[in-house]
Length: 257
Ligand code: ATP
Ligand code: MG
Image (cartoon, rainbow, N blue to C red):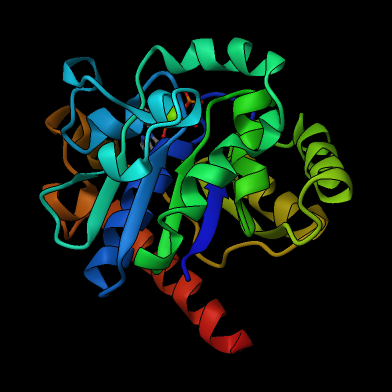
């Protein structure tokens, strides 16, 4: 049974999509069967893996709202063992349409339940909000990774996010755990960034990934070629970091078994 992990932060541009894509790619490289779920109407995870969501007839929307089997929307990627459920702009409408349907927080859960046994990991890339789509992602997940940008204001809004996770735990998914905060976009020449890292390590009420993802131009360039960092520049510092993050995730799982 797959472990389902949502990458969540309502703040925009903190590295959710970059982290989801590259962790997924490295988990596949380490021999795991991985499904990446693009839960963001922006479709960045889809396009970042070379899939143009506008050119597709079906996407996550049609499974969450239209009742289509996920098997009809899962696509394979260039990487063996890495599949994706793409998203497109119509998913933004789902947020509104879902308000009127039963068990609206469980739509994604019901979709993923149908394919969970085929994978080792299902990673969910969330949109930058705490709306119903993100709540669907949390309810469907076993664990949450919170990418945190190493910059001023990084920790602002984190208590709101932790509050939402707590509410989901109390009312919808009691077993939801925080896998960890992941510091991203770190510039070691920047004193403030170093302060943010120690703040997170000291005050984040949960585990923090040992790996810190550096700011790296190569990581920012890769999505415009539709490639993960492993396929774009496997020897860059960003590549090494995401490989280490994937290994931490696997190691943690092995430690509890
Ligand atoms: P959104 O909230 O809009 O979905 P996000 O949290 O998913 O954003 P990303 O899209 O992963 O964030 O990253 C925001 C921007 O920063 C992108 O242009 C991305 O390429 C770039 N970026 C992400 N991580 C890094 C990094 N470590 N080094 C350099 N650029 C990065
Ligand atoms: Mg994103």
